[in-house]
Every structure is written in C-alpha cells, then in structure tokens.
Image (tube, rainbow, N blue to C red; front, side, top):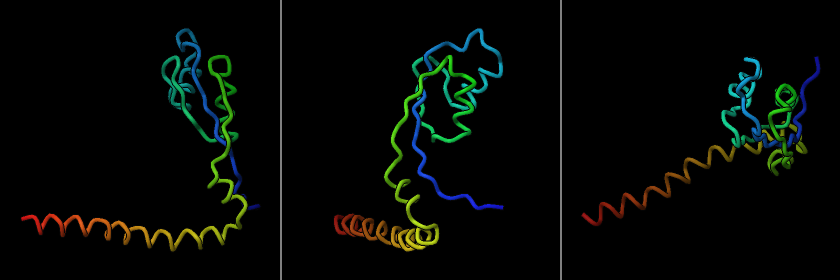
Length: 115
C-alpha cells in the first residue's frame, strides 16, 4: 500500500449556464447535491481533483469551468515534508487561544472601570 503525498491542487470555479429543467434526474442530482449549483448564474469554487472533475464531466454541457491558482498555503504544504508541516502547525494552535484571551482581557477591564 502506498501513502498519499500532499499535492498542491488548484481550485476550479464552476458556473451554471443552462437550466436543469428537462435533464435526467441523475444530472440534476450532480448539479444540486454534488456541485452545489441550483440556478443559472450560480458559481461555486471547488478543489480541482478527480472527484470534482468526474462531476463536471457529467454536466459539462450545462456549466462553464474556470481554473484558479492553488492557494499559497497549499503550495507550501505540498513542498514541505509531512512531519515538518505537522510540527509547525502544532505550536501555532496552542498560541492562538492565548492571544485571543489577551485581546479580550483589556475590554473587560475597561468595562469594569467605567462602572
């Protein structure tokens, strides 16, 4: 069994350009449930992966697809080994709640001093 490597997948913007009326039920289900589209002109941004591309292939006559660049964080994560990415993420998660508490503390002190 091989392990999956982190890949920098881009994003795709999918816009519905044709009505779902008169189409087969499975096509309508792909549009509404799979892609999250419901009306003409609606757009969604989804990850560019084989799962999404398969759904697009089913409804290619009803949608317009634009490829977007991969976010910088995803590209950086794909370049780093998995162990380094996990170690770098762990300390940041611990520091964040403390920073939020520090920001809230002055607001409570100010409210108490006004009373």
